Image (cartoon, rainbow, N blue to C red; front, side, top):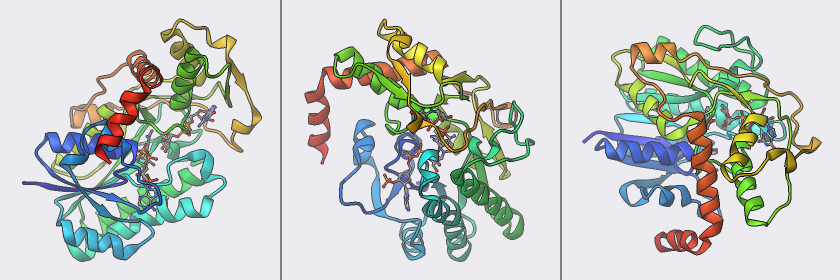
Length: 332
Ligand code: NAP
Ligand code: F7E
């Protein structure tokens, strides 16, 4: 049985990837960092907690990484752990660099010393392109525009460096934004779909946002974790852009999301300067040609279906709060 270790198991992608690898017959180990509040709700939401083994692993702690690898003896490691919120990276630039940047080297060195044959996936990001010309592909020069993007770019380069320098099987997926019903509430898509549901229920009267003109290439997380796995199954390690090839503004996302419940976003959305960033990335549009042609991966979920899936899940959450809390309480 093949074994995989996923860091960042409590995050959005961790849960989707765990579900996917279990369905492929893997023994899955999920690395989590200790916190005062248990946060395995995403694993319950996808009903996968019972199928995996959780182990303590903090990217700030080299020893914890090494002992996790020694314990699991994985064939593949997926590094999904990061301080992943761009907005907060401006306030916590050093912590972001330590976790999302240096954390990658801590894992790579652990692999190098314990078993350099382990295949490694690094969660790189379209944020590394910043305001570079569209569409962005593997050939586009990087212009990171936040401490998060700079930290991720360091991780991206060091990953390539270990591939070339030590002949290790390391891949980076340069993933564009991907969302789902279990996306963190601080990200704009989930903030909007949750806001729509709250307005529909009569709990809120307005939704405060920042830059409505920013454009993103949004896909579905469930589709994107399949690309992570597919990269590691290829004969040679490489870096790939993972995107839909379609971009929409935050304003368009609002329009589509409010329309799902029959409302006009113009009556509810207001801008608030607290939600603007010191520097923003204005327009991301990925070119996924390389992964389509070499690996055969492509997105299955359209923008419209993604927005609808997220809005309906949030409406359901407020309409049936007992079902939701019972579902989670059952599994604590
Ligand atoms: P997420 O929901 O924010 O999850 C991040 C995970 O990292 C959480 O499990 C978090 O644990 C963990 N983590 C944070 N600091 C850690 C530390 N010091 N040690 C160990 N674990 C730590 O992010 P996501 O959306 O699933 O994204 C997965 C990865 O892909 C991230 O690396 C992100 O930067 C990258 N990425 C995401 C997107 C996207 O659109 N979603 C696009 C490109 C790249 P806690 O639950 O304890 O906080
Ligand atoms: O912002 C604008 C904001 O925080 C998208 C992470 O997963 O994807 C994500 O990073 C856009 C930005 O995602 C609000 O200014 C307007 O232009 O949802 P976001 P992000 O910054 O693109 C990349 C690929 C990652 O790698 C990251 O880990 O929306 N925006 N108003 C707002 N954004 C937020 N969060 N909140 C607002 O109120």
